[in-house]
Length: 265
Image 1: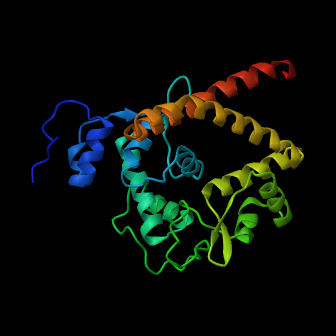
Image 2: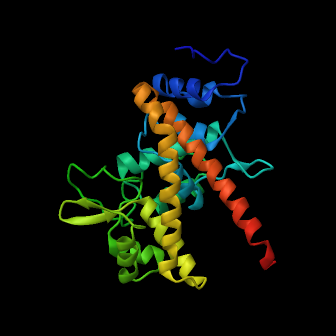
Image 3: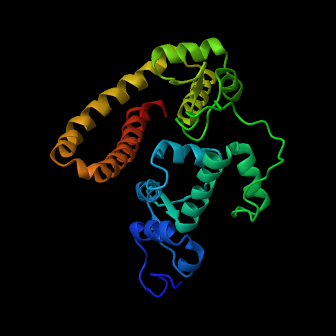
């Protein structure tokens, strides 16, 4: 079947790439000779049709784990390529369909020189997977699903410290049958909390980040919620705008914080 876009001399929009992937699945052939870059928001929009629970924080988490290496603009913004989208899509499929741990996925990518391996699934890897509830609700969390013991080991924290973070509202667990599991956001929060503690922070001081984020979320909700009420069909557009606002807010907050702390040298 001849590709709908293969003869085009134009760069592909994210929407065109998504449509092609979903309909033909032959991304490598079609994108040959094209070098379109996209923002993290555009990357997110391209993945949402197949992975509706994907978030910017999850993409950043995978980047922090060394699974993605986006380029940066002069101002520090991430720039992703079609190859990045292809690899990320493969990573998410390995997690969703085969429950491969990130350690195994990273090893497979390393062994294939950063490209998608020809053998996408290793059946007899012998690697201990993070805990997953084996029931019908096992897919309710994101790319990581670990017990509190595994979370403590991964973050280098005592379980009592994790319980305190959970009590503060910084750590969120999910019921899975008879136990509670934690997703990739919780893993990242725990690792960041560990970093703060190592740098001399009292764990109670982390509450200021929660309060600040909740206030920011309230403001964004006031701005965007009326758009959804006017036309529920705009949800995808509103979600994209929300992610862009979060990204811009993060950059602005960094600038203001550094400016405020200039006196420390």
